[in-house]
Structures are given as structure tokens and as C-alpha cells.
Length: 233
Ligand SMILES: [Zn+2]
Figure 1 (cartoon, helix red, strand yellow):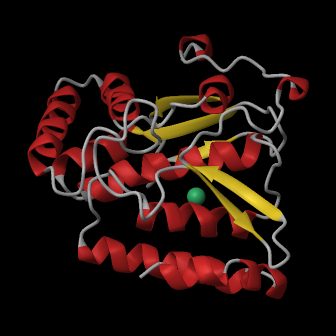
Figure 2: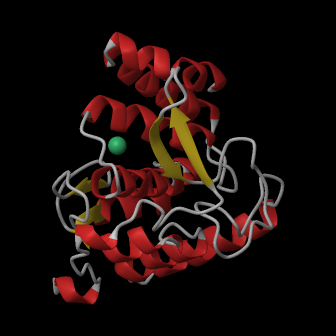
């Protein structure tokens, strides 16, 4: 595919001042001394609901009680997949849920449909401030989201999860530890507000995965994230 179609111009590190790409919807993780460990921009767990405005991340169109709007979105997505408009269906999800509504994400990431046989979306790119990240979404994932073998909430949240990786891998500072990246991204998957809900089985599954990454963190990081971990139920 023509990479230029998706846009991922290099963004010089010198252009990044640490505030770029963040917003009032960012959440800052701090260590016990109050030192900032990591800031991720998404709809925080206690910020559930719609009406967040067009600049919110991972929300803004629907609230947890707005099933009608969610059904409309799902119906539109399904029809695009049925028409084999796969890239369009993916772009529709990104736009509708505001997943790329930050300067960093718009500048540093591209999202594209692939024909690889792979069970999940994944993000490729160097772990380096300003490095272009490519979110690959296999056509199979879109088809399974459409036929229901991947839950709707799980599908939408998995796309948001990959955008968390964009922030982690190309933002400032970058997050070097793979286990830390996955732990926080699964916290997002489980808690992000303004997105379709996970069904119970998916929630249990992602909780186990999140906990498994927490278990792999070094002890000092476990302390840093203990409150975060305890808040996820
Ligand atoms: Zn991940």
C-alpha cells in the first residue's frame, strides 16, 4: 500500500516539548516521590460518559448509557466491512472515537489494514521520540469484529490500545519497558471511558492479561503502579 496515503511524516524530536499531543484528558503517572513517570492521553476511568467534545481521546461520541448511538456506529462499521471497504471502516472507527485527536498521534502514526494472518492489531515502530508508528490491523480482525467473534467493545478498545502504544513509543519520554507499556495499555483497554463496554468474558480475559504484565514489572515499578492496578476491577 502507499504509505503516503496514511501520512506519517517524521516529526523532529526538537519539535517535541513534552506538552505537544497532551491535553486536559491526559493522565500522569507519578512515582512515590511525586516525580512524573509517564503521561498518557486518554479518557480517564472517572471521566466516563459522552459529551467530552471533539478533542477528547477515546471518547466523545458516546457514553456508557448511550447504546443507541453505539448501535448506529456499529451498524455503519458493519456495512462498510460488508462492502469490503476495510480501510474506510477502520478510519471510521478512528475518527468516530477520536483515537488520533492529538498532534502527536496525527504526526507520528499511521493506521492501515493488512492482509496478514494475525489475530490482533499491533503497532510497529522504533521506540524513539518522534519515530513513526504504524498500526497494522489485519482484515481478519475487521471481519471478526463484524461477525461478532471479536466483541464490539474489545475491538474498539483494541484500536485505542494501539494508540496508547503510539504515545508510549514515540512521545516524550518514551517508555522503554515492553511490560510496562502493555500493563498501561491494558489498563486503558479495561478502563477507558466513552467507549463501547467490554462484555464480561472479554473483561476477565483482559484483566488476566493486564495482571500478567503487572506481575512481570520490577518491584520498584510495581510500587509505582500499585494504586493503578488496585483501581482496575
Ligand atoms: Zn499492546
